Amino acid sequence: MKKKFVFPSKQAKVSQPSIILAFDWFDERFYRGIFNYANERGWHMSPYLLSDRFIPKGWPGDGAITCYGSSLAEFIDHLDIPTIDVTVEEMPRTVPRVVVDNEKIGQLAAEHFHSRGYTQYAYYSWADVTVNTMRRDAFFEHLKHEGVPEENLFEIKQSPPELIGDWHKHQSDILEKIRELPRPLAVFAGQDNLGATLVEICVRNGIHVPEEIAVLGVDNIDLLCDSAVVPLSSIRTNLTEVGYQAAQQLDRLMKGEITNDEPVRKIDPHSVVRRQSTDALAVTHPGVVGAIRFIRENFNHPITIEDICDYTRLSKRGLEKAFQKHLGRSPASELRRLRLQNAKRMLTQTDEKIEYIAQSCGYSNSSNLSCAFKKETNLSPRGYRNKYRHE
Figure 1: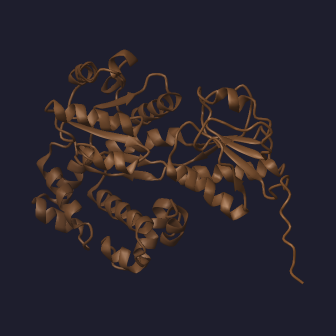
Figure 2: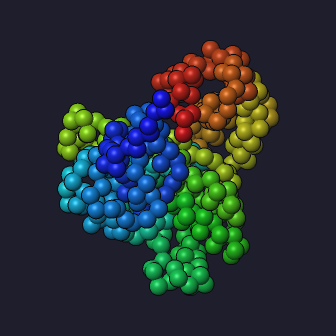
């Protein structure tokens, strides 16, 4: 006998948790982290708000991940379901938060520029954006801690709205501010769009990037950074991890494992992605400049300090003194830094075997690479790859 097909009830309930995302911006990396966790847990991700600012009356939601801001504030304020927020903006109610560590972003920017020997620094930002203020403060504080006097720290504020709408007026306003500052100048822009704009203004007006002004952005939006007139260096902020851990915290909140008073969870930035906009060193000593060039071109070979001395025709003591004076570190430290930097890139961006990576970065074997890695990161090369490569 032929079985009769039974249509499911129109009121059939979705068995898995139904989650909504309330964001006024989109970054695929962030959403990917959330969806990775959702797929592991079998969550239903609601399509509402992904393409429109509309939710049907009576939608049976179980949780929300939000990005608090003026355009969605009213909606988010009235959510009566477990909620995790990913901003640092003030909210009228307390919810758990997962955010990028803006203090460490500022510190990483300071270390990137300071390691290149700059003595004059500036921060370029939107005037009223909270994360920009946090990044600026951390940037300046770390530089002061490294001995940079306050009079060598400057701020370039974004033009007011009435000027931004007029390209020529906007350009003239920023250009006037730049021309008052000393050079060579290291500029940390609080966001990639600001950094790309600054690079364009400089190049259009005959200011060399990075030789006169080096520019560093934040978020490493590939298309934006790579398409800048001079490709823009940027801080990779680990957004996939932020999204994943926001979803993880929501899971814990829905299960009652944490409350709305849970401390903010901060996610460390990954690294500086170096492009042409900061590919310069603010060093005038010809021996140090030559040594740095030699190290950069040969760090993937088993070179020694004696090889560097032979190239620069400086004594070992003379080379050490010049490096300490102009860079604040030794030639060996610079060689070690470049090797580890390249090893980190290969571990997270390639599938090469660790033995091959070690030899490609100037280490005689994988054991020497492992020793250097554990000393620098407290992780083995394999542990570092497992922790960071998924982004």
